Length: 182
Image 1 (cartoon, helix red, strand yellow):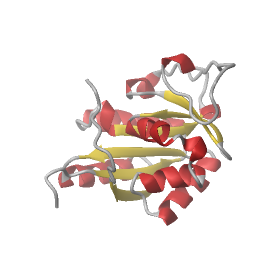
Image 2 (cartoon, rainbow, N blue to C red):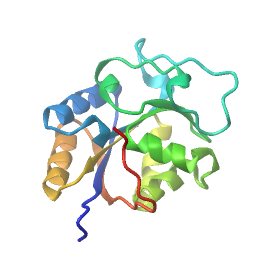
Image 3 (tube, rainbow, N blue to C red):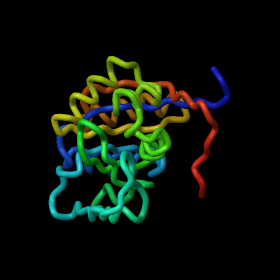
């Protein structure tokens, strides 16, 4: 084990309400907004989730303030929210470290779309394919970055109690060292 403990706990949530409840529980448990990633279909949200389409958006990934993503409620607490176009799956809203990973990989060019990106994030391929299948059916992917083994146990328990399904733990494969600014 290295001195940098980096694992993520992943799960699929069936509804936006369940995700909002989970995010509130993560925050109450002391997880940082920068430790939480969410990937949800753009067409899922009620009125408070609105996006403006940019007419000059590049193919693949678009992110940042220019995407015009406005999110209320618990999702508004998350860091780095942006819009993504995932080939074969359509428009998504992403937040947290996963947003940076997907933007950095340029999801549009990743072989296997989101499966390839998830495998790149350290998830076994069979899990990544299952997650892609659940995302295609409207599921919401959530991950919690953990820097201690106790946090992994806590994250799993929180996900189980808040309705998370297909929960798994991955070791983050950091091929380049990057830190969140701030």
